[in-house]
Image 1 (cartoon, rainbow, N blue to C red):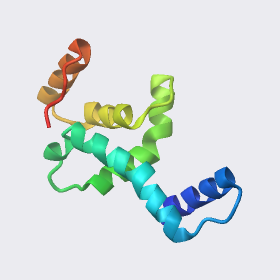
Image 2: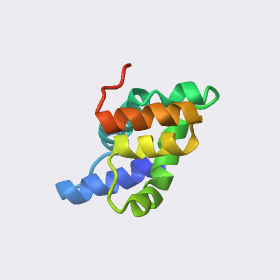
Image 3: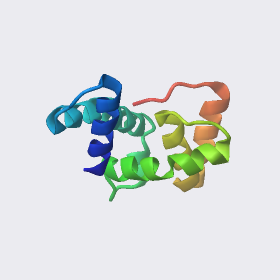
Image 4: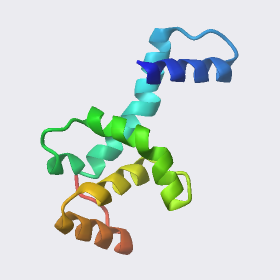
Length: 110
């Protein structure tokens, strides 16, 4: 809920007026949560953690994005942050595959 509230304040500052909590929640879902959830699905990380949800990964990425940005020396977009998580916590075989894909620019299969 605090993520939606923070997004509400951001929207109010951006638009210069009052934004309803309902509108803020819809905007947060469309512009913040869904793109990150899409990156999680695209990276196929869920298969490595069968007892976790997309929301678990969303929370992890949001909480750790600052540390990851410091570690990589740049601001990370959603896909880069999810990939950093994947590289840190998945099994070695999938780390090798991920590295291979990054080096050769291969497209990930859904």
